[in-house]
Amino acid sequence: MTAASETRSVAERPGGDLVVDVDRINKHFGSKHVVKDLSLQVRRGEIFGFLGPNGSGKTTSIRMMCGLLTPDSGHGTCMGFDIIKQSYQIKRRVGYMTQKFSYWDDLSIRENLDFVARIYGMKQRKEAVDQSLEKLGLSSRAKQLAGSLSGGWKQRLALAASMLHQPELLLLDEPTAGVDPAARRDFWEELHRLAAEGISVLVSTHYMDEAERCHKLAYLAYGKLLVQGTAVEVAAGQGLTTWAIYNGRDSDDNKLVGLSRQLHGQPGVDQLVVFGTSLHVCGKDAAVLEQTLRRITAGQGLRMEPIDTSLEDVFIYMMNRSADNFGDQP
Image 1 (cartoon, rainbow, N blue to C red):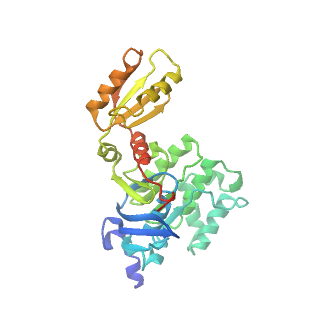
Image 2: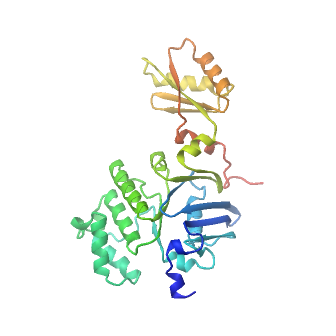
Image 3: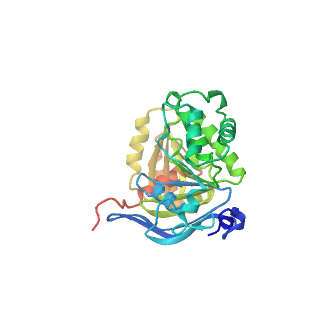
């Protein structure tokens, strides 16, 4: 491949607007089949969220799609490059932010960024570092040691480092784990700004509020892609009806717990989850579910109402119906 062809813009490469396009990729670790026939497309400027229980293959899938890990079978492209044959070209255009803070505690913010710039062999390092500090709001703390930073500031440093070489695609592995809500909000505002500039983002998360801020979602359970689409499409696609039941004037949580036991296994009841002072009851058959709820709750002084099925309700429902690929196998 010539230097000219390596530096083609995303729009000029095969696939055009598609930054990631993979078809039936698989990965085994020993006897465990951790990713099974995954097919997925991600477009330029799209924030694509990956959700699922621990061990579901989220990180492995993201790494394979971006040439960081070789699939056992299947094929695909990332930024127009073959994920198997041209992984080197892909790696040069990807920014990767790990869940665990992986920079140097005894170096300042500026020194950390300068070191990363040296690793990439960047020309005009000082200008690039200055721009990164300014862009991520780190200039006032440039001399502060990384080890003394709070979780939110460490997160910001890690994002700055992953963006230093101006990647076209950003990979984030549970980037806000252990970070306070205000810092999480600021972080997602920055992600949407990057997406507006045409940078694509692949992010794994366990937070439902973050999932709802993604343009598209994929839910993986133990290696299999169960559903993908927008948050609205994913929620609607399960066909669940949900009711919320409240204690009314009685604030005794034990009453909801007791009601949950009463409703378990009743006709039309497919899922029961206590959310604070309410009990969410979900089911596929709306008519049967309502009949059951009115029969069981009659005379108990409870208030109930139909509500929109939340993304969290949907993912709990799907997770409870997924088989663990690391469990006992025949």
